[in-house]
Length: 66
Image (cartoon, rainbow, N blue to C red; front, side, top):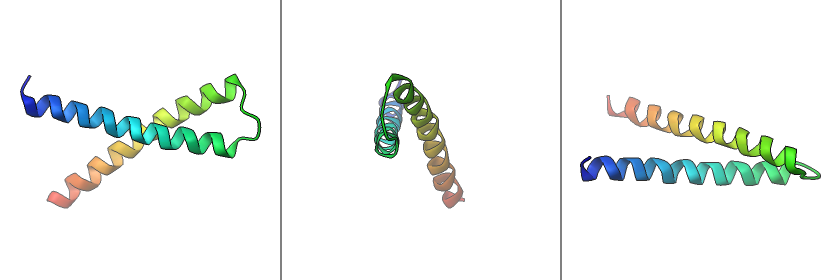
């Protein structure tokens, strides 16, 4: 794997981690009494949201290059 490929994978992982952290924290702010099940659901929802946010950002960047 080239250095550019490794950097791209690392930057994707960092971007997903940042999105996940922000969305999971937002979930915890909005629920009234966090228990284990709500935390697990929030973590899963934040992961889906992070993937969607990354895909939307990549689509916007790719669309701007055309």
